[in-house]
Length: 224
Image 1 (cartoon, rainbow, N blue to C red):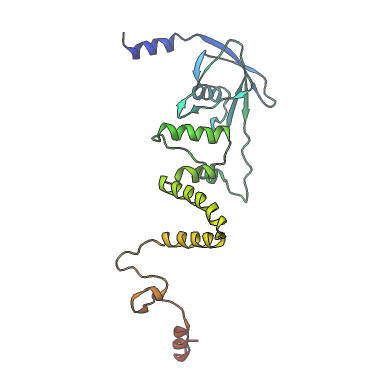
Image 2 (cartoon, rainbow, N blue to C red):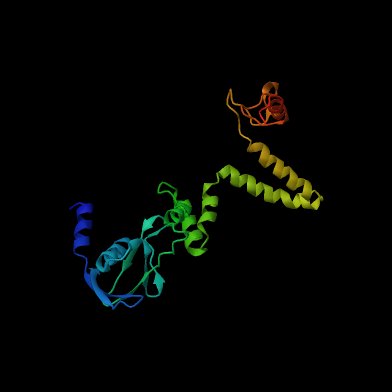
């Protein structure tokens, strides 16, 4: 018998248990028949379908601990016993502001680690997100910076005390600001014209630029 078929038979032969669902609110407790070993993701889907709840706003609490679908990038399994009490909390939908639904904007601000990320990134993300409860915007900054950028940041903090010891703190900060501006200027392609005529060949200006000479010509031509 192959390993895969053995896994399928084991899943089908899994013992069924009856758990009690207590939904926070006026709803009465209900019972649900599920497998004793089940993924949190599948359990959440079963409860949402059984009580007609929105799965995205569903929080599950078992034995005083919140249940999460994934940990370190892998599906989480739980072991249920007959008669276990599962608390179901439905997170209220935030109020609509200014007549617009902001759900799409909130989704854009949520950071999700790509599935192709390495195992150490997944573990670091789980620790920062689940244990330290860092906001998504900070996680986005942490995981989008390249290794070279992190090395430069670490080097900057190493050299900062040295600059302070030699009373060069203000100069060190000013130099850092100029370097940030210089390295983020980018490179112009051939034929591109800068918005500032001083950087262009023969001080050529962009078409439609409004300056003192243009105003003087318009006044002399009677266009004002």
